[in-house]
Length: 287
View 1 (tube, rainbow, N blue to C red):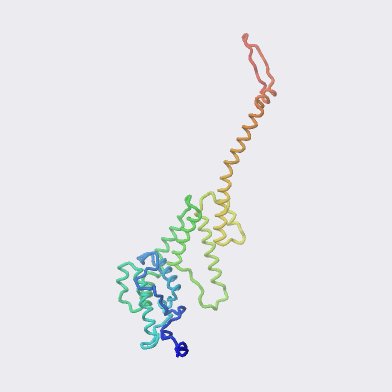
View 2 (view 1 turned 180 degrees about the vertical axis):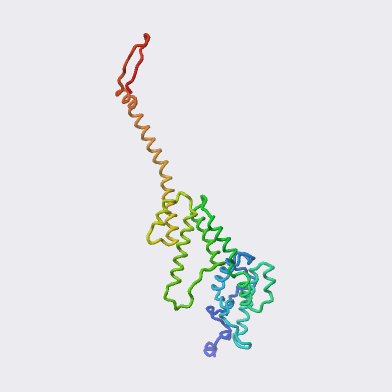
């Protein structure tokens, strides 16, 4: 009967996967998709890894590369689902690598093995690179560029320093010394100083005001104050020629309305001493 057919479960119900589960793969997904701006090369692992993490988190697949989603037992109902997702992720990772790096990981069994290998090779703390970045930071100047462009440049250096030489954090969850908060505050102050040091000389006044503020403003607040100062000076500079032109026009208008007023005032206060010298009259002003 029709009613009985309507009550029968859909044959596909057992094979459907909730889109919120990590095993879900969209119909538009395929292994050879490029999901980061640049391929992985020797020297850009920090930026590459951050972009790839963002993508994998968005796809709910980060657990496959960090090892939190374990491979199910062979023969279980989830085994083939896990294998399918892992194969997809391996394709995403290798597609986003240059050829020489890709060839070195092509025989890895899982995406987690690839991720761990890349972390071991490229993700370790690099003292020479950290030193180079610190040196670059101390010589980075605004040099007439916009405040936004200068800040973006400095921010990029900070992020790379953090990736090659991360600041230690308290992870035990039992500390009562508030170590993490104090480390973050120290890092924030250091970045404020580095940002202010590279600004052009025209920002000397606002720089002094920020450094004299108690408590020290946040990095975002300091950036906002500098940008606001730049805006105010730009407005003042635009108004000045207009004010000068209006004053000059008013001055010329007054001269046309009262001709000879300046010369008349000058002559009024001048007493003349007329003397004769060899038959010639010479006028001497008392000024």
